Amino acid sequence: MQKYFMFKELGTNYRREIIGGITTFLAMAYILVVNPLTLTLSSVEDFPDALRMDYGAVFVATALAAAIGSIVMGLLGKYPLALAPGMGLNAFFAYTVVLGSGVPWQHALGAVFISGVFFFLLTLTGLREKLINAIPIELKHAVGAGIGLYITFIGLQSAGIVVNNDATLVGLGDLTAGPTLLAIFGIIVTVILMTRGINGAVFLGMIITVIVGMIFNLIDTPDKIVDTVPSLAPTFGAAFSSFGDSSFYTMGMLGIILTLLFVDFFDNAGTLVAVANQAGMIKDNKLPRAGRALLADSVATTVGAVLGTSTTTSYIESSAGVAAGARTGFASLVTAALFILSLFFFPLLSVVTAAVTAPALIIVGALMVGSLGKIEWTKFEVAVPAFLTMIAMPLTYSIATGIAIGFIFYPITMIVKGRTKEIHPIMYLFFVIFILYFLFL
Image (tube, rainbow, N blue to C red):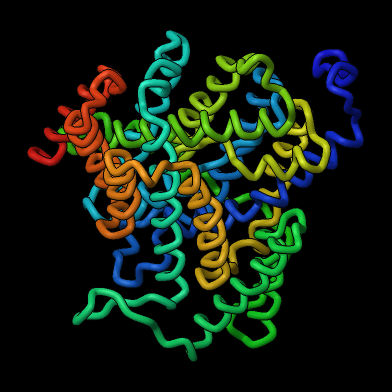
């Protein structure tokens, strides 16, 4: 085992890898609660229950997808990088596709499955790396920041801090309401823990908020802690049912599949590079075993869609495990084992409300917006498409719209500025695709 994971070459041991794996799990364990609440649209009161996904099944699918993805990454990629259903991508799945476009969740899972298969094929051919390299770095950063704003907006809504206002579209909610006060408390606690640099701050913040919520009778107390694993039957294989429905084969679904592909492209690649760089694994500007690592998330996405969850991708929270000493894929196996163990604690996790998860959404959004500092805002031809990409996501409640607008404006501003030689030919293809996206979708 030590030889396979190159413990000696990387200067690590079992103790450091186990601690690193546990730390990564604590940092990203919030997804076990946030993902089921997001995909089941729990914060949307007037949504028909018959059209919602089953909470228990999504919980199991989330844990299993995270475990399988992390195992593949650990054994094949050998990186201390854990995977789970991605934040932003789950919001796109639930709020843009299912709620906004009225697409059945079975169709949405079908789109995730197809995107995972495409991802797998693109990775095998090496085309995936070429497509990533064709996108200008400014737009990559803008997409990440835009998703961060989008997630934060959803978190503020779930907390009741931002509400609908007929006069101004949005306004400040009732800050004296119990659930809203609990969410505000959670935000303050999580910010303090994050500022202090405590490992697993987001997860610990949620635990503290739950305890306080129970004390003030804002959250139901669970009647048990450990129980049998919920049934996966309501979502398992549901993705395949969409392939026999003619309504699945539309330009709208094609746009959804392309958006899932695009967002996961940069989410996974950016996280992989960031974590590998932090661990000191990048040599001569090259990433060892990059193909294998990229293959892990495509496998995890495909399997996750079959199980019943949105796109599975690499988690930047893995950097917490690296900071704690993790250097090899063995740490990812430890994280995977903890996700499997969490399946038996469903009763304890199922009482968590939107007021508890809202702080996690807001804090993760704040972290993602950090990429704005890497954009050259003094260059107007770059600043405009980057800004439109970022701001359009929360304002239109659509990640796809933000991406489309930015990709349309980038060639325009660069051509007018006389920087045509810097535009990759693939960007012109994207320009045409997104023009058609607005015309026909």
